[in-house]
Image (cartoon, helix red, strand yellow):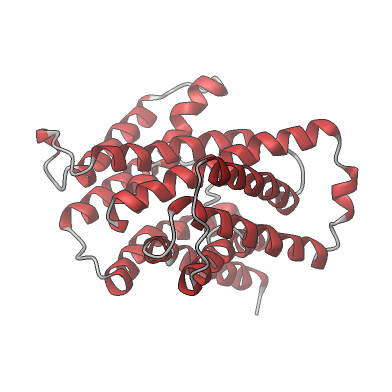
Length: 294
């Protein structure tokens, strides 16, 4: 097996696993509150990433981190996993899975918008066209195919799902400027994030339910949404002759996700969801994408 074939293999495995997590979110939320689900998932992910760091022989990098790097990780960990997944999981709690995953997929468009403010990048006509098309897709999903009416099926849920993309875009922009090892950063971020989620759950008086199915769901989410799948994706990028050869495969994920949502969660996929998601993806392609990492 040549190196490029291995790169495609890791990329397709990542896409397949990411395609299942929207269903896992919805099923697990039937058994656990959204903040408790995040607490268990973030904790499991931290353990898994620690094991990966150990296998890669990178644990000594933790000792070499300075005060500024620990502070940066605490801030990034506040954004992701704490704030990002807290908002996203609440959106999934309020919306059908098909709507939440489609609206959350606007993050590459949000990256372009925020880059103009944070990085001073110019919004070209092409980027503006992509933004308009993408958010036309958002309106199509959120209004169940009647965007001109501006009658939203669930305003709080839609706002949270789109809002989660803003948090992810902020995390992406600040994380990409951090030169440290990617797995190391992810592990330390999740350690801080787990602490933040634990404090949130404690202050909010969350009831820690030791439900077996819920715990298995949180373990699955921690492993395949937050943990090992990201490592597989990084491996694919490192092996590929060019980023573009594997990064385009990520566009399979939201459509595969709809298939799993239909078959596993039991939702009837609306034509408006398919159309809206197609417009969101088209908007991303029109504007020219940043490097895809999730």
